[in-house]
Length: 101
Picture (cartoon, helix red, strand yellow):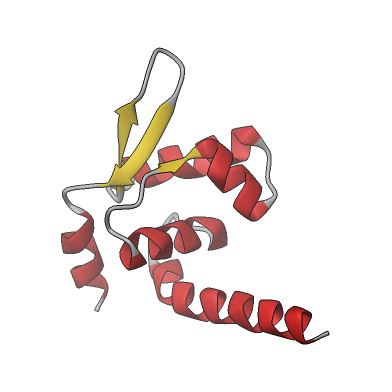
C-alpha cells in the first residue's frame, strides 16, 4: 500500500511540474512531460520505444509526439541507423524555455 501511495505521489508531482509546459501552443500532456524529462536531464537521449513504455501508448503516438517536439524546436533527431532514430535536446531548447518564464 505504501509503495502505491509513493508511486501515485510521484506521478502527481511529475504532472504538476510539467503543467507549466502545457502553456506551450501545440503541446499535449505527454509532450509536456517529455519536455520536463529533457529539462531535468539535458543529456538524456530518448527513443520512441522508451516513450511508448513510459506512457503506455502506441508506437505511432510516441513517434508523433516526438516528431511534434522536433517541429516545435524542443528536440533534435539523431539517426542511429537506417531505421532507428533517437531524440536529444535541441540547441534552441533553453531559449524556448526561458521565453516561458
